[in-house]
Length: 140
Image 1 (cartoon, rainbow, N blue to C red):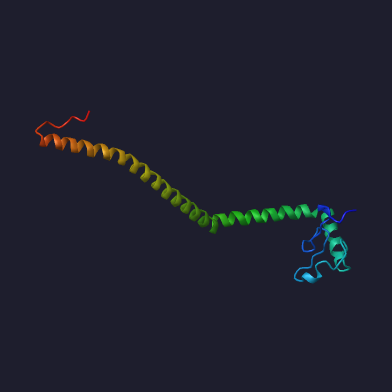
Image 2: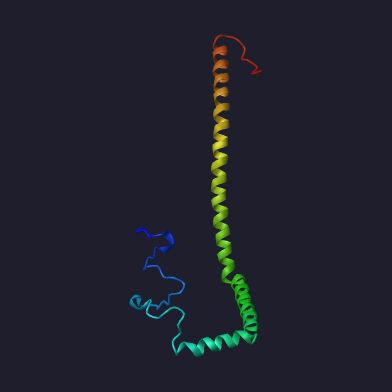
């Protein structure tokens, strides 16, 4: 076997694996228990959870939880949520209006720039003609 490690053999101990038991708040104890081993205190809780889920009561509880959350969401949207939505819509509308005003101003400015040059040329030509005693041009 060579001294070079294969990529799948590389192990960084700072990255927890799915089989590691992590202990919240104490990094020194993060890998203290063997993988998938449950303490004596945890076994009854796990068994009770499994029995609860097997009994079908979990589906009923999930439906009740969904209904409660739906009710809370609708209540929030009818109350405080409405003002949040309105303020965000107002801000988006103002932002879009500012962008639109900028675009229109730019386009009108460009159109006026070309028209203004023609208007000044025509006015200077008419003024020169009137000083020379000729009638002004018709512009066509």
